[in-house]
Length: 69
Image (cartoon, rainbow, N blue to C red; front, side, top):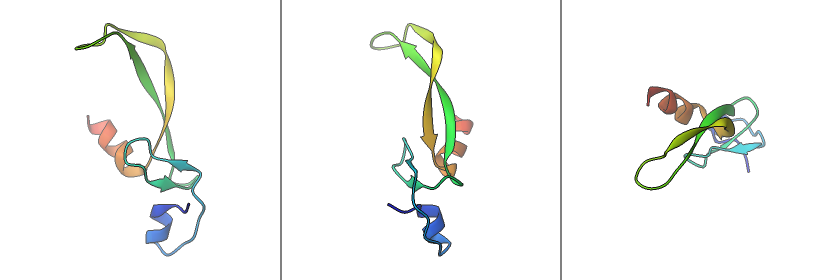
């Protein structure tokens, strides 16, 4: 798989990650690693935030949207 953003710029760069939100393949330059909170509990609402976070890989667009939310 190739990096989608690089392909739009006419470059051919191998993807090293897939965005957890949109599924876009991204290279090292365009991958953003983000630590995300983990919640424990049942429906309809989580009961408590766990002490550790989970790393998630995001593309630049989804990372920007994540920050806005």
